[in-house]
Amino acid sequence: MERILIVGATSAIAEATARRFAQQGAKLYLLARNRERMEGLARDLRIRGASQVSFAVFDANDFDSHQALLQRAIDDMGGLDLVLIAHGTLGDQKACEKSFPLTLRELNTNAISVISLLTHLANDLEAQRHGTIAVISSVAGDRGRQSNYVYGTAKGAVSIFLQGLRNRLHKKGVHVLTIKPGFVDTPMTAAFRKGPLWASADRIAEGIVRSVQRKRDEVYLPGWWAAIMMVIRNIPERIFRTLSL
Ligand SMILES: NC(=O)c1ccc[n+]([C@@H]2O[C@H](COP(=O)([O-])OP(=O)(O)OC[C@H]3O[C@@H](n4cnc5c(N)ncnc54)[C@H](OP(=O)(O)O)[C@@H]3O)[C@@H](O)[C@H]2O)c1
Image (spheres, protein in one colour):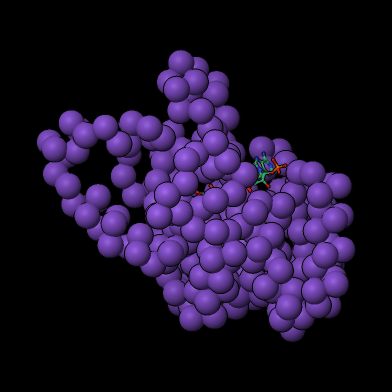
């Protein structure tokens, strides 16, 4: 039976993924900001078949709390087979351009908090010599664009950090999965007009579960984003700088 920790568990993508893990009878531990929403989610996951669901309130930017919270989750489940890190904010790019404190907050939430969690988790999984670390990064981290480069910087940092961790932990039997979704219809993107490139949270969840099972390294979800991002990454900077992206 899998013992799974989900950080940012009330995110739409995390919830959809947790429902799939629950159907497999997993033991789950949830960390998220909103206790009420977590209580409701925990009830739902138990009904769907999770063999155990526990949770604790977590603020990603309270870095000092991370180690103790992670240890409590591992003790509660009697070990850890898989961690999914899913929290994030799509900050206001224009507001960040006018305010370094706001930029710093976005970088803390989307990058530094993830790096803090991964620093502790990597040591735990390295010591036990098994387990999977799965983190939701983004296609936005593949290339800086004027419309969201603060968020993109954070996601790019997370993707690079995960590459390094994978290289370190592969020989220790620990699987590191970088998840790069494209446009997903969730509360984070509620204000955006949706088009044919958009996917549901459940479609991304299905891809996450499949990628964990297949021990993939980096995945674009849905898969067509691999082709789109190959094109985007290869546009020469002299041309890219003139585009309104
Ligand atoms: N939606 C997309 O198009 C898209 C594309 C690529 C990647 N992603 C990534 O996918 C992940 C999940 O996002 P989503 O689309 O499912 O969005 P979502 O439903 O808006 O979820 C975001 C979650 O992050 C949590 N969060 C934000 N700041 C936090 C903090 N300081 N401490 C703890 N939790 C915090 C939120 O908690 P509260 O509910 O308490 O605010 C919420 O549960 C994120 O990492 C996002 O960057 C999303």
